[in-house]
Image (cartoon, rainbow, N blue to C red; front, side, top):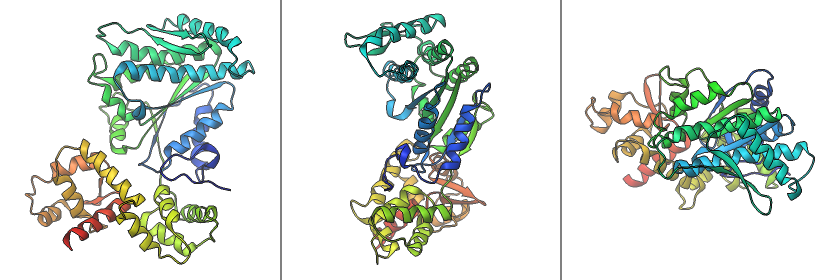
Length: 405
């Protein structure tokens, strides 16, 4: 029976309706003689991480490919901890391939042999300040030599990625390094040697040869587009961008009905269509509605309850989005007021219409709209500004209605 995972990535065996996307990424990464770099762009809860998990599973079946999956946001810390975590992920990917090639599990009898191979690979490429430790029970861990007062984390940052090249060349492997929530690397730029971190990353790409490819992904689409697509960015033209879109109507309806089947309910195309009209082809939102819907229920009523109930899945998620994104945006409380003002119109407002609606000076409004656009909360279509996310727009509309009643 199909399983569903509300609010977290689906494991590879349960990924639905993303065959085309998975095939495209896998084909690019398997290309011989060319090291493609892909940027996977898509808004929150659209299914990027689930797709990447499936890509990783498929690629790992190839004995010549090692795959590193590393969530930048989840592992973010000061440089020493962050780089140690990243190096461990690279070590683990290499060790997995060594075990695969020797047809054994994690037997301690092979630990010394693996340890030696790691040391030899790092030494052969003169990877600075990175070595390996082996514990008494055969666990191999990275050892990064930090001075008491590190003045340049940039060298260590470069060395960590260089270790993947060393392992790839030593064992005739291709390394695929997946960096999820890639844009969060910017949080390291306040440390010595990491101020221009994306220029450093460009140097890594230029030096990795044909043995390492990168997949970067992120849910802050506008920010990632700027990092990768701006002519002034050091990473401009270094990545092919691939957008993960919402599901189309056909797949959305099928997806909704598969969820009902998993609940042992009959398919309901009318209900599926209503859900699609309310939230589009966003899988997380469709699952949230299907999770609470039962035969005979009004889909719109289920949706409204999810937005208003104190423990409603969509209410909690909307509050999370606003809390996280508005906390990072410059502008203060007026930003949420602008979102609320935009929420009562699905086609949006021009800047002059919005200024009049809010009684704000026309010259002041653009500087508040910019951080909302940067945070992917607002978008501009045909000259009109609208709340980008249909679910969030309805949540804000309902909230305004409740306050005015």
